Length: 267
Length: 267
Image 1 (tube, helix red, strand yellow):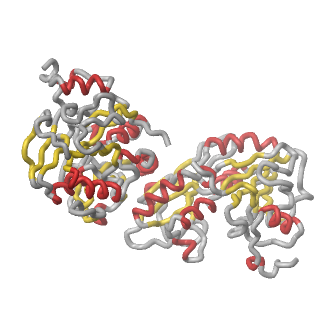
Image 2: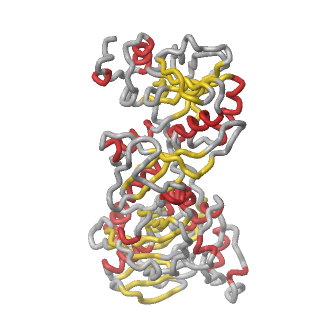
Image 3: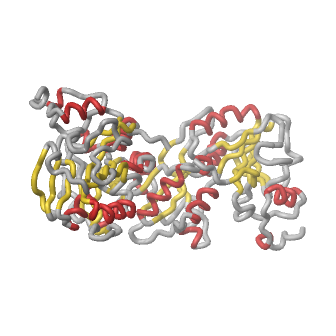
């Protein structure tokens, strides 16, 4: 493995080149910062029997679950998202869930693949965060080198079949004028969770201890900051755990699918 | 005057018909609610000598001063805003300012008109407020039958020549999820002051007593509401008073120019 000792040393420019390196076992790291300008996505694989309700769940909850691709049953390719893409091997890490519980952690799922597997790719917040940075809006957790804070809220998703449960949100804090720009900017990125779901008082959505997020790092909040809460891609992960299908496969957190799509979707 | 006793009884559909009635002296009321779907504007008339700096002031402060029309010196028509429009007679009320102080209140300014007068039409918030209502977002001061609260802030405009001074804002309060929609919706109406300039804590922009606005009615705020502040068209009026030109003419508050432009500007 040429760069497995420190994969951060090499930044791939082209998604196809990164995916080739992943497939060859030469890149096993997180994909943040790789292939700047290209859209990255969350992977969810379910059996065809489970996938129909999950697709309805996504369409009913487009902010936490922005669908950017759906495969044909049994087909591990998604040509619309990447030339030559093979979803069994082209992500640097996979998690397998059995009956809703975490099971294997793999770098290739070829041995698990089934003729009735249906793959979903859901958008993530990377392209929106890049847009904030390019607009000169400080993103405090990135400046602090940490992970975005995530909270389980008392807001409920719209259920579909066995898929449902609470909405999970990310928190970013801004000076109020920057919060306004972040709100209007994020609306232009529907594939990156779109406009926020809440601003201001965390207690209104059931967040009682801002310093103790359910996932990620504690927030960095400066005096006078406005709190802004966006729908989070962890929402469908919790929904899958609750639905407890016999088998589900997702990307390993941070180890995303890097697509050939341009991250910037002009309005 | 056919409907001067109760002008609210007749709602004109077509701007040209309303302007004809105004010109004939048959309509002297406020224009709110008239000609639904058509853009209404604030009028500012200055001499050519004063107008150059005022135009720069507007372009430097597009949120409080969205320019939707500028006339040729000495020309009281603005064909781009209305077929047959005559700015000397087609507004139901005018205010004259001399050396920055309020002077006459007129229904026709033909006798005052000068060859060096330059007319400006600036957007107002009506079209944005209609969009909020159509989107099902409650606008509390409208529901209460009152005027929007306006506050002079400690935020400074970008000065140009003698024109400058504080930014004046309007306040509207919403449930947080509605505030997000109001923010993203308002950005689509740059001619109606665009996205807000502040959200949250009024003290951050120098508003110390929310219950005592500088203009308009006290705000209607419900528990849990998010406060949203937009730039206000009173800003250029204060700038003109401070600049104290020998003569300036504006519309009488509420007595707007009703244009032939469609209020909805799609993005």
